[in-house]
Image 1 (cartoon, rainbow over the protein chains, first blue to last red):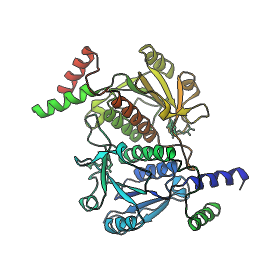
Image 2: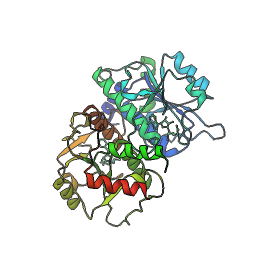
Image 3: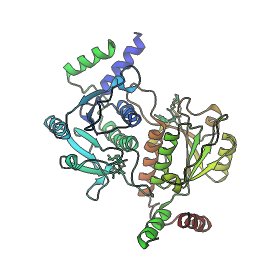
Image 4: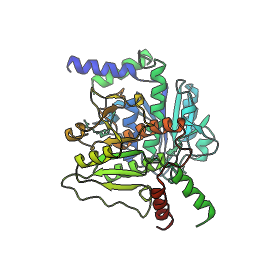
Length: 191
Length: 191
Ligand SMILES: C[S@@+](CC[C@H](N)C(=O)[O-])C[C@H]1O[C@@H](n2cnc3c(N)ncnc32)[C@H](O)[C@@H]1O
Ligand SMILES: C[S@@+](CC[C@H](N)C(=O)[O-])C[C@H]1O[C@@H](n2cnc3c(N)ncnc32)[C@H](O)[C@@H]1O
């Protein structure tokens, strides 16, 4: 490994945001999950929490190439245990959902520990999941289409989070717990 | 057509932003173009300008369903004539491009007539196109991946444009030229 590559890895690691996460419910199109993971890497999200669909095999995480290498999948049995686990870690759960209750995604504070829940391509966030979110958020739609592509919606929200976190200086010094930082660094250096 | 449907169509038409456009260079993955068009509809973009790749057939625009029905494709022979045409219509051309010259996408004024140039999946914006853009803009990347998915990058920029335009009141009253407004309304009512 060249010194430049090592410096790059360390720079990226030191910008990781351990208190920003995605919770993806039943996303079944691999290309959507891939685009989500690529955006997560870009905004510094270290873990994507996944609740696989009931009848679906757990999708293989392609760690050999692409952004999947830099983002860790955390698979949960169901939405209940996923939300309970995130909440016990101090996360606020924001549900991206097109409802009348939802607040504009720009009117939310993303500098606190935040998990963004995304719904399935076809049916959106399930009622089970909605019952567990702290706040529903919506991205305004001015046209005829009813919703955005899920990876697009994910990115629009995450880049608002990035802007707020950058303004708050959260990318300026390492924020991972030392043990996790060491473990991740080891994995990145020895693939 | 129900009165509700008519009111919906008129509402959407009156929020259309004739001075906001996309210029897509050689996008060849149909699913990326579809996601771009869906986002364009959502932020009120009436026209997507397309320069097809040299050896590629012009892709069929699926007007039968989906967002393609509400957004008009404008096909250009090459990037020169596309840019010349947009500039003669008063557009500033912003090139979404990962370069050192590029300014942060949030530091740009999107309330002026703006065309957003997007590059191809594999190779990005061509040199020919770069020579014609007014400003290069970049979306910050904090991770290991070198770029975002093109439909994701498109949405991140367009939702910044939407936020600025909403703050400036540009969605509050009809902004299409009367002849174009009548023509579009006719097409929407009589598919
Ligand atoms: C294609 S949409 C699902 C549409 C589904 N028919 C529904 O009614 O919810 C997939 C997911 O993307 C997210 N999403 C898409 N557009 C959104 C918007 N405008 N605001 C908030 N979330 C959105 C939501 O998480 C949604 O569950
Ligand atoms: C997958 S990228 C192309 C990557 C290509 N390898 C390159 O070096 O340009 C496709 C298009 O998405 C847009 N894009 C992707 N990420 C971007 C970013 N971070 N900032 C600005 N534009 C971006 C650009 O228009 C780019 O041409």
